[in-house]
Image (cartoon, rainbow, N blue to C red; front, side, top):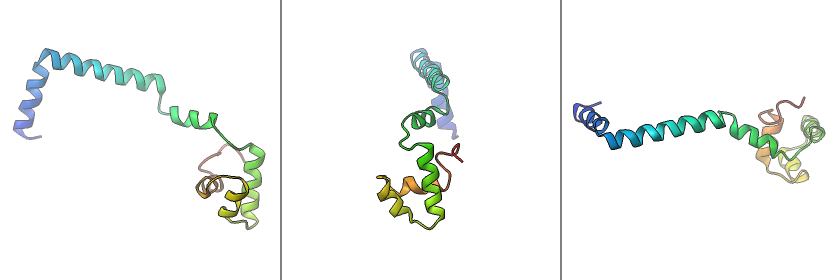
Length: 96
C-alpha cells in the first residue's frame, strides 16, 4: 500500500463515526455468515431438486448406454447443462 493510501486508512480509522459504521457493518457481515454458513445455497438447491433418485439412476444408465445429453434433456424437460452435471456427478452426488 502506498504511503498516501496508508495515511488515508489511518485517518478513516481515527474518525469515530466512520469507525463505528465500519465495525457495525463488519459485525453484521460476520453474523450473517455465521447464520447462513458456507453451504446455504447448496442446501437451498437440494430443497428445490426436480428429479427423484430413480430418475437420476435412469439418466445415468441411459447416458452410459449411449443416449445423448441433449436427447436426455429433451426427454426429462431440462437443459443439457443439467444432464451434464448429473452424469458427471457434480449434482446428485449422493445418488449412486
